[in-house]
Length: 476
Image (cartoon, rainbow, N blue to C red):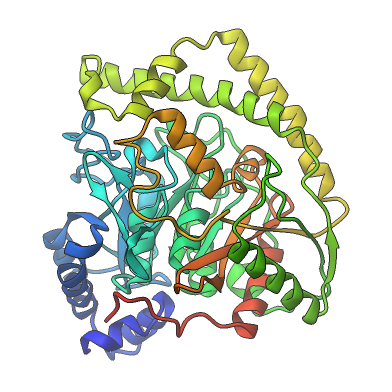
């Protein structure tokens, strides 16, 4: 297989070549390694190269899953891979090595993928840009002067550049959808508890964060969720209902959907004119496909919502850091954490139990308000980003004051967090590009546990306005 041919296939396409005997898993592994070596000096997307492990796995008896032999990358945050380092993007935990696989890692392996390394992430996944002091900035293949998004920035950069066809990603406040939007990919934030969180899931204690993938095609996202999204043994959390495989859903017509839409930000400030134009074009596209479009804001008290999330999130982060401190046997030094992380850790430790629980109670009440809106429509459309992907350094968590970081993040990424709080599925699709050739996605949010409708709609849009042939600057 030639270098250029490898990148022309999605994950299922590569797996079919393996099944048909046209290529071996070892050949695919070498193609991925070759691309990492060619492009990673520019992108800084892959931060741990597990080439020996990958070559051994590729030569072995791989599971007969839907992605048998397909190269794959794991995000360097949260998910454990036995024998691999896990830095979480932080100097404080830079020396950690895991001794076991997380349950989701086992399910990725069972899908047949060959894991070739780990991808760049910001410190503890806090920011919507991947620019940590430990791992350095990850760059966008469409224009390396711009961000790849965060916190799954390394995953999105790798997939967009054709290094791998899909990669592990996670989303706590937008960390799948933001990098997918920045890099022109499909990024589904799945329903809470759809994928396993165990066995050590303290990082998922408040339920905001979920794990899935970013991919170049809708069908890869659907097929991987089919492979991983089933009940977890010994979990106290029920897996949301699902009628049929999602790979079947994308071939079904979505029918005439009632789609609400709004580009109003939580602070009511206007978004970038290019993003607004792309949003309006997406509304027109959906109207042209026969869907009923209704202009409808997300009618919720955002000040109360984010105040409550701030209390809950701060307490949860401080508690998670306390576990890391216990594991390390010492407190972090201030120079081991970035300013935003240091402030979050110190301030989070001041949150009282009463404050955290009051915030959690408030979130539950407000989440019910948001979920009740979806009784009146099937899908809610918003942009993912408030601006096209900013340049590297604009939202620099290492250099800037924490308040300024959050102010700039609020402008660039105003839309994604509420659906982490509610647990709903929310999908970024690469439907728009700026005048400078940078992608920015549109976000489709469904009813709780209703990935099926989103996958059907995504399948329709992928056929109507295909993006797979678009190529970034950094490609084969």
